[in-house]
Image (tube, rainbow, N blue to C red; front, side):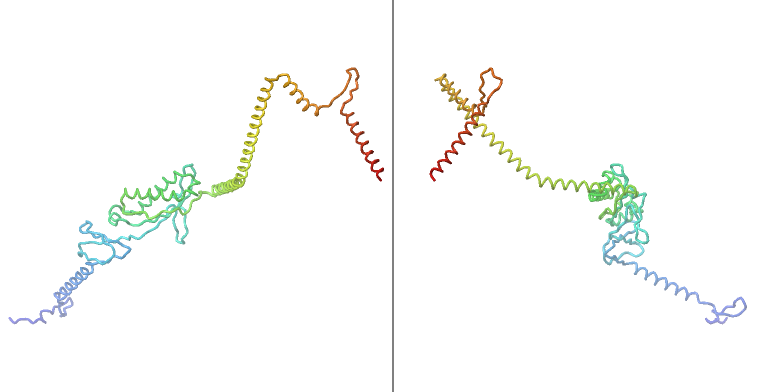
Length: 347
């Protein structure tokens, strides 16, 4: 039997009875294998290295276990066996108590933004929370949604801290203290939950009463407080002005009193000494001393008294000083006339 050529072997009869060339399946198989091998080589080579930028950390796992954590740089791994998960480690921010719409406007979150203070007032207070990934492994594998957990922790801490302060403190002087206390509370909770996040900073964006009526009331209270502070400052200013004068006046009065005290004491001591001297003389010469004391007393009293002469029977009393004045006036007139006559004779 004659051997068939290769061309005869590749020719077959189709459904219409025509002779057609049989396709060479071995060639297609070879091409497919080559393509598959090249693809495998390409993906193997391409998957054997990876690049981590400065804003990321890379977590490498193999068979579900963490092998290592890489920072910025170019690294190699076993293709198809080792897997790489990149985590953004830059600082992120989110609002607590409000949200931001598409136009960049802040929208108050009434469900989470309204807090109750220690004096049982309602306060709408907004915080801005800044955080970042501190542990990429814990961030990826310890929880499903670490950002949501962080937000819940922040809300809980804020409510706990704000409830320890009055509404006035939360709106004015206590903001800095509240921020620090909330940050410490959040860090403590994050350490316990270990979700791979840490707080960089938290700040109070705004704090105000929840309704317009309450806002107006608080403004009135604030105005009254400012008026009270102004009055207090004015009073302190007046005190500072008047206190030195009052102190000097008080010192002067004290010194005058002390001077009078010393003078009275000296006078009393002098009188006591004089009395002792008189008493010594009285013991020696009682009668003479009595008369002398009587005469001295009369000398002091008589010039101050009005002397009236009466015989005891008449109803009319003539003061002696009236006659003395008349006599004095007459003597003065006579003396002046004598002086005038004398001067005329001399002429």
